[in-house]
Length: 262
Image (cartoon, rainbow, N blue to C red; front, side, top):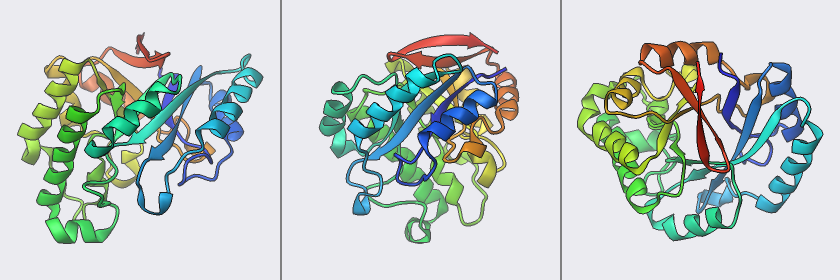
């Protein structure tokens, strides 16, 4: 049974209005042992939509960590929206904060957001998805101070035809996975993919390739932005992990990995 949610957001993230206390309370009520808050911080996102008041976030989180200490473990994380040219600023930000866990994610591709139809209208589905994977390669080449790469095929959520096929991108996917493994970095299972794609992020093909190539570090996250979604579909995440050949999942404390048996 998976008892740790390592991708959650509260009202410190620009796309959530849920109080942090309620996210933690929900996790405890659902029987989790650990919740890691991973608030969005996307430097240079248009209109500063995903800026983060790190001081207020940290102060509130550590107060709640003490308050809930007899009910659930609360950990301090962040989800960084990465673009290659931001590497020095991202490194400084991570260095100046004592995170338990850092997710690196691609939300913008050369400043363009695949959430909006214009992205795929300009590049086409295969072209747009290939550009997305290319951006990940660039990001991990220039910035490596993270623990896992988030929702590895995120841009597929917004395919107009809903016909994403990872085999079409096998070579570049393999290159991404090999680089992450060689760096000692992991990936996540993100159950939010079930809402739009019918399966977790990343696609089961990518999970299986990660395992085949020697990958071991894999965290589980709901990507919840509201209390009702904490630990959502973790039974399906566990089944997906087992089907891909994994016997463990990973948690992080003080940026150190610990493997938990399924």
